[in-house]
Length: 330
Length: 82
Image 1 (cartoon, rainbow over the protein chains, first blue to last red):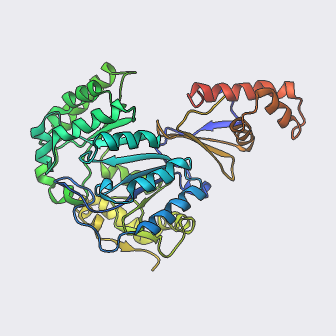
Image 2 (image 1 turned 45 degrees about the horizontal axis):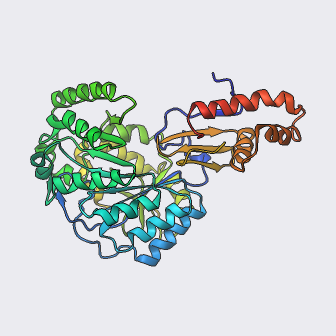
């Protein structure tokens, strides 16, 4: 018990989770897939990104959404894609959020970051930029990230770090690169990254379609997690080495009873319950963000959601349906 | 005292939520803690906070100062302040 008991309590190490989402009048976190277009064709892409969706939010709709995030005092947002830097109003939206006190993380493949962009990111004062590097070598990175360019991505990290942008590296382990995880952490440290994040590959989108090709064996995971533990100790206080040891099924088992205080917004303004499930609980073209938050809280108790989640837990192959959206509350 | 750059405080019905967005850790407080957090955010000193709180409680500013200091120490321990 802490001394200040009675005035302040700490929730258990909650990664953006309310222990009870009913307590919150608005989400704590927004994960926003800004667009679907992507210059790469990654084997493991959760969003199956590539081409632009026909009904993506236009600039005015995106700005209106940002206004709602600000008005509801949502503290933290992440913008991803597709590749968000392909969106023509990406910087305008990022500037709007950060200048109004929203902590912002941007997830990008780094291919469009030159000196000018790195300086522009620096001016944003954002929480971080997260760059995907799936290997310590060009060979491993580029086999997974088709059309990717390892050198260009590493150079983007260097430019960001030179400009004091908090830079995090994300590494998705597969059969192709899991043996390089230790070297990838060494590289992240040498680059001066703030953090290195990894975890089991999520069986969603193209990763689900390519599952047998990509998914490491339990032995490979065990070996990699041992390396991660060692690296955590080696780099303690120097770089944050974080790995999430659970897979998407473990995540669903937990979320079914402890939904996160967050919303996942896809490029057309529809709102998903969570990445691995197909359910949509709202549409920002038809409801306000505040109303969608109410629908989200209700949706997790819907029989269709509970039953399907339990079926997925028993049969992970159903994760292939995660991007075949099912609208609740039509 | 100033909150760390990426620490965000939001008032809630139950009190307040303090979100260290850099470490992705969330803390919650009750109504009393929320009041302290609000005053801290406005730049109030611990003395001022105790004075303010004593108006709503049947306790003197001196009596409250121990609890308020402990609360602030907890926030410091969690590196929520610069």
